[in-house]
Length: 79
Image (cartoon, rainbow, N blue to C red; front, side, top):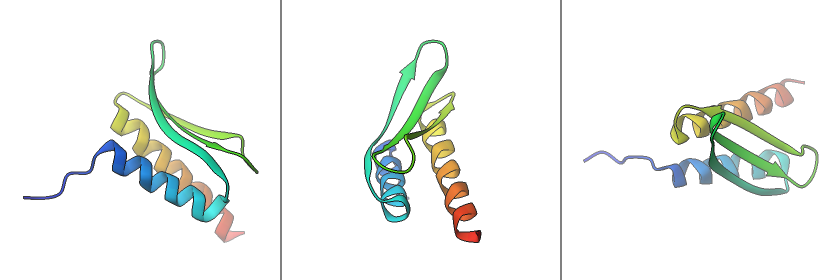
């Protein structure tokens, strides 16, 4: 049986990525907003205030946030 990722696994991965590359991170989480839908958020205590991404499902929102974080890391490393 193949391992199935959970949203907890995704949150831990995003947290680890942010901590490794940006330093101080307060939290990573996902919540439902009535008008927007699912919102994933990473809140920092240093250089950024926070990063957010939305999606139709909580999983999609977390994946979009992870991709956004990776894109920022890639840009930062290429400078």
